[in-house]
Length: 194
Image (cartoon, helix red, strand yellow):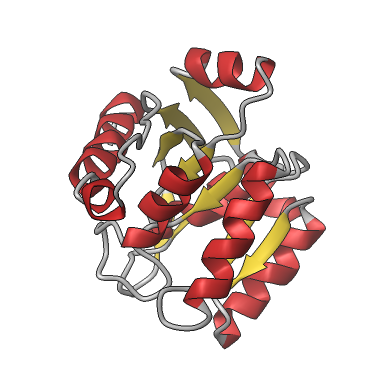
């Protein structure tokens, strides 16, 4: 993966707000669709970000790669170990770590926001920062998420959306914000040129 990724040319758009949040030492929760995981995993390497990775067999492969790229891992999903995973994510934010969550993973449905992201944001107070990619040439797997693997020497655009704060004190009200998160990722995709 490192050999392949070292050939990619990356351009970053609309990261001004993210840089301000990081300068203020404000942990953030990055959200992106599951199919865009690979290039973003490489782009944010060695930043100490905590990532939620499923406990399934394919999650173990991703967990090993993530650890080698300088990530922290929290294991679990909405299907297995959900309560433990949510608690681990909230603890990671409160310890000052950024998070990365694929709100439609690990099994979909694609491009839908599961409640975990919203609960973590509501309980931790960390803003959600949508992120998306556009790739000039890639292999797309025939999987539920159309997983993207950029080809050698691909041009990748990484674009960030505006920060989303989940400030509702009631969990039910916080869960109603899933549309805002999906819209934020869609806006990041437009900025990237998807």
